Length: 258
Ligand code: DAK
Image (cartoon, rainbow, N blue to C red; front, side):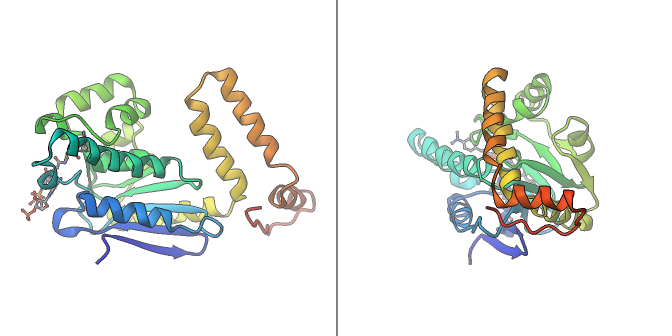
């Protein structure tokens, strides 16, 4: 049985981490399945992705503690690299990725959510980086992404104290965009994915690249990144279609990702 399920719904898709007996904790098998599922996405037709966890209790309860407990330093580094490579793949995926956080997002679970572009959560969600309580540091980018997503002092407090926070606090610090009742979460995430997938995909992808790459450099360089991506949109089918629809007052647009 694959531990990652994948369903295409029109121009967006839903990927579900499914290892319910361990609250969807990330072992090597899940990381390998996630990597393979990401590699199999057909970006010519899938224009946005939702990632969620199986069940109503847990998004991902972290990296698998049983698997990690016996690792040597070398094996620990290799395990960290496997997770980091997959999470970086999500972060740099050409299309927007929405995390629908349906419960526990602890350790590697919070790190997975933070690799996505946008986070929505259920009202029973719980976020945290409990690693220091296990005698390790966050290993899938937690120290880096949390400190970039929320104020640095808050990131440090959460990481140093292994404190968990509930959905409303996650919203208050900007870790998630919105909180929903459990049964409303996936529909809301899918509605957002569908709305994104209605826009011109080449433009949406260029925006993701501009934001991600621009934030890593100073403003002078960042503006040039935007200029080049802006320029690359012109004379594409989707730019001509989008502007023609506006100028001819036409509601329906036929974007083709070219
Ligand atoms: N790993 C393995 N199994 C887990 C798990 C996890 N992270 N979380 C839950 N499970 C398993 C439990 O062992 C239990 O299995 P059985 O005993 O039934 O066989 C089953 O899921 C149900 O869990 P509970 O019975 O504990 O359920 P509760 O509702 O009572 O509690 C809980 C839910 C999420 C509060 C609790 O399970 C919990 O505290 N889980 C651990 C959460 C956690 O500490 N997560 C962070 C893991 S550390 C690195 C690479 C990566 C990382 C670090 C470094 N490098 C290479 C440097 C990442 C680290 C982490 O993510």
